[in-house]
Image 1 (cartoon, protein in one colour):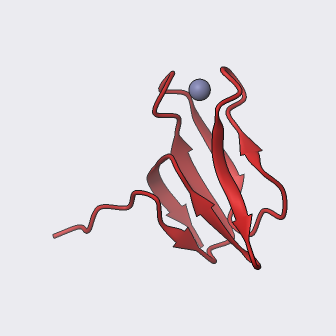
Image 2 (cartoon, helix red, strand yellow):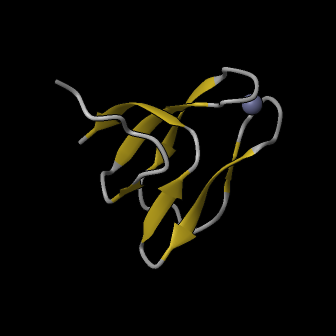
Length: 64
Ligand SMILES: [Zn+2]
């Protein structure tokens, strides 16, 4: 049973996320210190929260 991984704070190195708006998939740095935007539609997908990233997109995969 897999838990839902939505709007999750992560300290993983890299995470694969899917933009909820345009379905674009991209890999982002898990500890991004800047806002991560979708490469296609420019939607804000994640923002930094004190060393971690608060992800506001669907997390498809966590790449440790
Ligand atoms: Zn997008």
